[in-house]
Image 1 (spheres, rainbow, N blue to C red):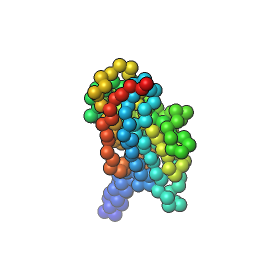
Image 2: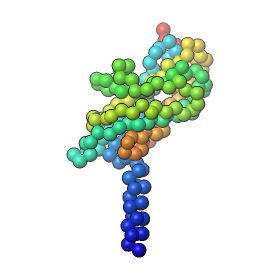
Image 3: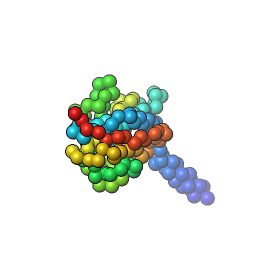
Image 4: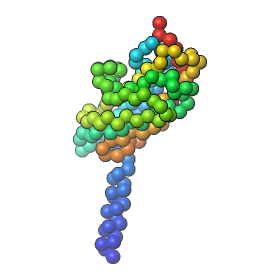
Length: 170
């Protein structure tokens, strides 16, 4: 009887530990800017990964997967590619730190390029490149749906995914 109880307790603990990572949270911010054709990088979403500040939880972790939804985008074929970058100085989009690139064919896209995170706060930028000729009445909408580390899924704080207008860079 004790062995069964111990086994059941171990199984419950394993299930809990494989769930969410409570040591890192994710804040999402979507600036309200037009997405421009003729511009190579259009920052559309800022993802802030914040590690719990307690001294015991400062170990590094591996970012394994970021899943984005394009649901609400008028025409996915308007998008040439979606890229994910690590921010540089002052948390700004810098193209020197690419994480991944996807050419979307469906409403869900996933970046699965693993990298180690050692900082307390890490900023990622989602950038979109549009095709040269699109209908300017179309809108682009990107929503971060899932972030997974080697220690489990991150709880993503509620955020507003905005429909962004298309435009032309002059």
